[in-house]
Image (cartoon, rainbow, N blue to C red):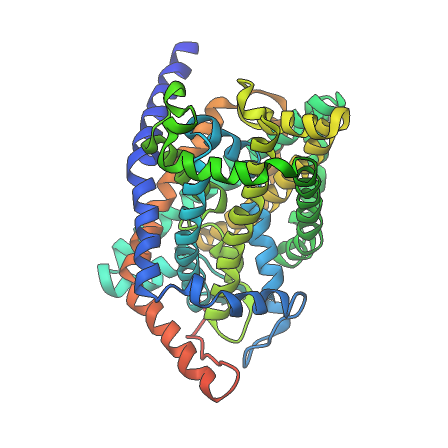
Length: 476
């Protein structure tokens, strides 16, 4: 049995090295650069309107013509659901891994990848809104929907359906099953380390609370995310601000440290650690994209349900989510690690960030990071569950029995994940994450003209007042 598991691990690791080390890292950053140029740098030129769309209408939705408030959620709620999935253990452990493997310079490349990724997720959200469907009084959408409908006239009905089904199965496995499992493991491990609670019991409690949220559908998930995401973000950012004040004398040198490490790792000791510019770029870009999920096809499921006057408005909200995840939360983690020097102690993963909190806050530091990790990982479980459910609905045409079975399997995986070591499962999650990206990127490239036309329509429609948009027929 051990030899079989070892063989599977070897295959999975080899696939991941090729997928994430070569193909997807360059494909994702390349797509981001392309859409930044092709769409006129919307993440920079239109950042002001994006902030107004997010903060000017925090808990309000705008009602498109002919729509029903019960079918969808507000723009801010959709952002909260998306961020609940984006801000997870990757913001704590992933940033630490990037620094340990790629040096401090990896953070610069993480920032750069996020800036380009904002254009990618802007495009995803526009397509998700445009191709969403009205199914039994509820809006639903995502890559499977825009792949199957948007590509049928380009690559043929059969090929479009194949790519859509392929994406759906991959995301259900990657996020709905395996993803929820590893997030549960992160919660149970951090609580066990900080407070000594039995991991299995923690897993049962997680499953109980998650189940209560799942059965309420997108509206309960959105309400939960709307309330919890701002709280967890404020808590973590306040901790970062306290640490910044505590180590304020080192902030400027640390920023310089990041930029020097990005272009000349040897100047800050990178040569001794074996870190090159290539490694700084690789780990910074890979961890950044894995954290903010730009181009991966996950968050469009949330943005498809938002109640907005025009798809472009939700595109603004979507790219602000990447900015918040990477430029704010990931940067906070990076500064916490570098200012406290925890990256120099030979630790790995979340232990690096945990040590940083212990350095800054003393004995209560591990408890604080455990609480933050619990919020981060639990909200990710909720968000990823919904992304999987959207694809169950796509595959099984809204059959309730399929949704009930899916919920039960997710809850079982949550409990199983809390109870044991899941190194192989983490790697499997990475592999299926990588696989599901491919059909999404194909669709983005092939539908590029449609994205640009929708953006042009937005600019033209708002000249005479608030933008308006006639959504295509949404009934299945």
